[in-house]
Amino acid sequence: MDDIKALDELIDDAITEEKALAVRADELALQSKQFAEYLAAKKHNDEKIEMLWQMVKDEMIAEGISEHENDFIKLKLTPSGKYKAEDLDSISDDLCDIKRTLSNKKVKAYVELNGELPEGVKSTGYILRKTIKGEK
Image (tube, rainbow, N blue to C red; front, top):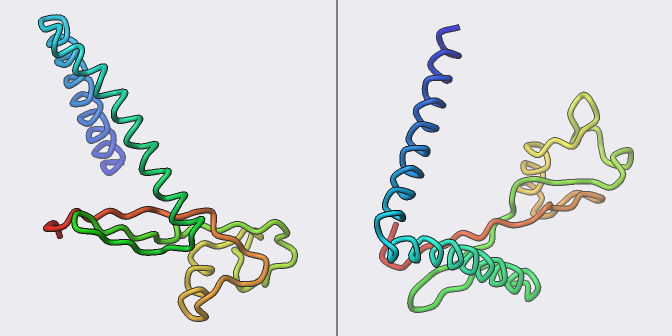
């Protein structure tokens, strides 16, 4: 019971911090037209940047490129670690949980051992990992 209470307190702290930042941003926006314009532009730019990185990821997948590096950044596509199967009945019981759902852990272990996905299993996608040169 104490663990749940501690978890709830952490959640409350996180929510309180988020609300405080939102309130402060609103206060500053009311005080400064420039800051309000910045917030609007930032939201638009954040969406644009997210779209651009998605385009980079899609292009890397389409071209079969798993790693790319230039003078400024190193990109690496890694499987998301989540898998799906269209027909679970055709999948080996060794790759499924008791309730006949595909086990991501078991499929990941299979891929690490065999270097390929089992027959009938597909990856649900990729994660694009970005490392700015000079960062570790």
